[in-house]
Image 1 (tube, rainbow, N blue to C red):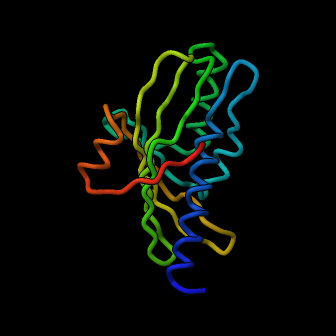
Image 2: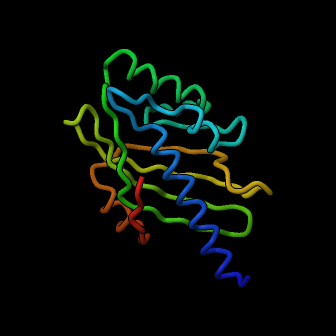
Length: 155
């Protein structure tokens, strides 16, 4: 397999992993978030940094528990994430991905956020080593201002 073919395959695997991670956090009145699928995308001990500042690390399990509590308390009864843009840079067994998405809460409020992923390739495949995200007024503008190209992706 050529280097170009390998990078294309890696990018496809990473795109799928990120889409599955976002999909695991979607829920409605009938379907709970899949916190096990969420945590499975990360390496053990991976750190996540939400948009709140000052930044504080949390595990995927802690984050999943917090999101599930939002549903269980009826604060957010419906939560959907829709992919807006994805830029992936692969260099050997490491990769960085910038993923933009729309977050739809309770079928009324829509916000956009950007997630930065650090990924590593293990013999079993790609895994997320760390993630940080922030709320932005426009994902498209953020990608353009940074000179990144972004592929659309389905969650």
